[in-house]
Length: 242
Ligand code: NDP
Image (cartoon, rainbow, N blue to C red; front, side):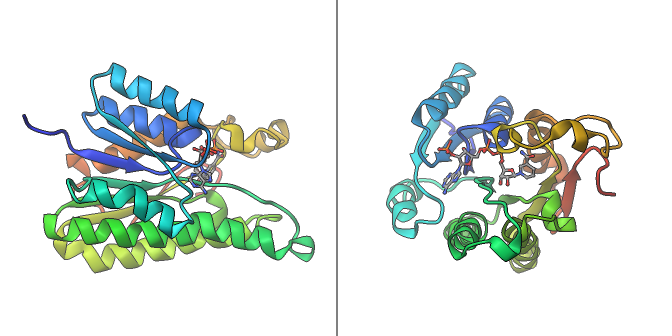
């Protein structure tokens, strides 16, 4: 029996990652679904993936924990290599830099940037001999423009853009395409405490975005029509930054 290609998504239990998993499954991918601790939410996403006839493998680990990720991924990678890897897991620890503690700096850098490094290293090693693959980093508008109160988060997200472009150059000859999707304000739990009414006034499209609108772009980048796109940052932000 022919196996479906696999997409490995970090932070897939909720929000944008969950929407990416559902969309990729609808396009015919089996899913490796990473998350940190919300087993119930992750199980629901897997259930949706399975309902449309795809296989979903739950991979709970902290993306900044090298040992944990190796224990989870090594046995799977011994059998099969995913076609796509999407680093989407994310957290915020916002605060003015004068008051920001070292822990909140380290934590945010670890999840976004170190996680991207550690997982890209593992995935690229597996993809190189296959001579195919798609890697997509979920960055943020903050990483493109900077954002007051997000010294840590903006630095991590900007770092992901530099890292992705470097990787894109490194692996292009092996037909591995690396791109960045950079969302603006997207309605998920991550932004639930922000003063959205005030913020929406500054968005040309006049509304926050939906996770599905980010997932659609990721899905395009996973597909055959994106075969000549690498090293790009694609913003999904309602025109907030042009
Ligand atoms: P959510 O808070 O809704 O979901 C975060 C996801 O990341 C969850 O699945 C969570 O798992 C997982 N996660 C968090 N920390 C870790 C970790 N250490 N290891 C593994 N998984 C982890 O976030 P969004 O869906 O809003 O955000 C997704 C991505 O999009 C993030 O990278 C974010 O920075 C980026 N983004 C979001 C924007 C927005 O407006 N929402 C705007 C721009 C960028 P669990 O459920 O187990 O906690």
